Image (cartoon, rainbow, N blue to C red; front, side, top):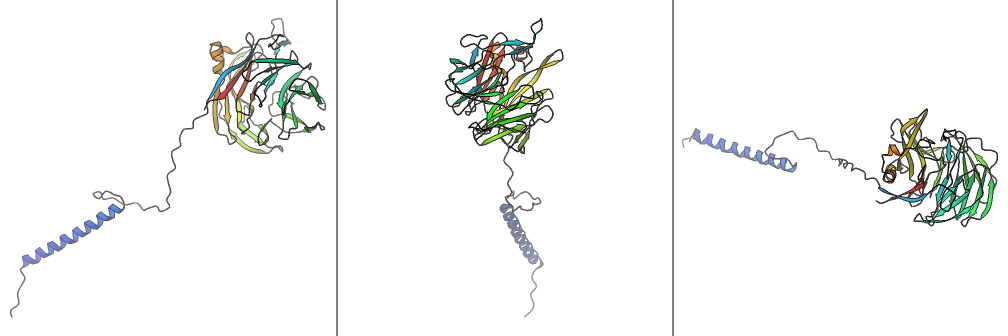
Length: 388
């Protein structure tokens, strides 16, 4: 049988059809690969290797909302000797009347009922106000040279620099006991009283009035044991967990240090301040939050620079800023003046009229009480309460 030849045109057609089928199959497979990799099928690009470590991008950092405090005028008292008035006296004045002006040296708040007690050092008495700031009573202590008052475990303790003694009173004002400090204060008379977590009395004595970190500490047992001298450095305060010392806050270091009794630094964090600003330690609350006063220079008279406190800055122990509380707001509302005009230049004590030892108290409820004195307006205590 003769061999039959397949027409050339048919072979070409079969080849074209087969090639088309192959191309269609390849296109289909490529599209499936693209779909599995979530890529658009009509875009050809290099595919990056897949990261199988499941690393997630960090969430964006949300802005921190600081706590907000509201200020109110809590106590106001005129200068004088009468009921509800506080004493004032000038020392070392010249013919123009300039000199050091002394008034109430300290105050404290009873955390049990929020009553406030002012140490009226010139009139040698204590004045008590209720939780709304209403005058209740005063009682005579008859002790000169007093610098600090502290309410502790249902008793009133008063420190006298004049007699180097801590006096213990009942809440009704009766003197119960006294504890004499060993030896004469070697420094400038800047003394304060505190208590450790066991109720022992701690008295801080400044060796150098211009160095906030240079103190001696006398300690006496809660039952009246013999005084011991310690070489702790820094300011002292206590929260619900223990007893702490702070140091390092100053013009140069601009850091806050929390120390144990051995003086070892437990926590340390930096604060940002302008060149002509300063920070002063004010205390802890029961949660261990730290409160600083921040002041700025507002003027000078002669060789003296004058500062006025502007803010309370509140930090937790890790150094996280919790609140910036503007101290100038109640003053500006009170006097209807710019804060630079509120500055009085007679005594040069942070811009306020009298020299006092302690002007701020932090309560267990995290309220801030701040005492300010003025030549013509007398004494005023402002209360700052958290509202969010």
